[in-house]
Image (cartoon, rainbow, N blue to C red; front, top):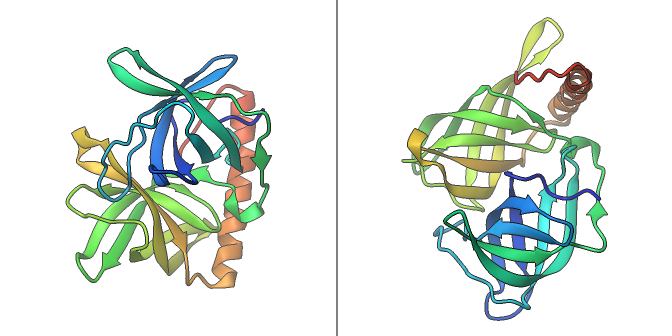
Length: 225
């Protein structure tokens, strides 16, 4: 089973009913029959949305190998644990797993320059990268929402040189208050104007890095570039 990774954020979709909409949440734990997640919040306002038992939901996420996955389930209960109020979801019977080369993501910690009409240029730090997009830690003072267009600039190692990447990107998710103690939050982007040559160069780098990450895990080591 390619279940979500404990501790990671994911997108939760309520396809119909009074609570219909798209939310973000985090997985806290899994047992043999249930998944325990944080109360979902909207990207736009960070407002919590308690979902009653019986609500049909769809989870959209990346598994431990960063492969896009999705499954439908139902809210079974609401629980209180370690001062957290959690939704209890039934474990899925079927998981759809979509292996797409450009969607494999690798962790990185690179400087990222961003620009928007509202805020001008500002610095951020990348969190992960794929051929189709990236996520980055954004200063709390910069308020981005899904659908916003951002110009992003960063460099990717390519052989013995640094490859300069500049592209427009669309904000997919903005996870409110991820790290309030650091005055930043996590935001994911989809590249919208990336030249195909640059996309292929990123994909090649991602897969070379993925091979190295697998080799390091075999000897009990990890490294974030």
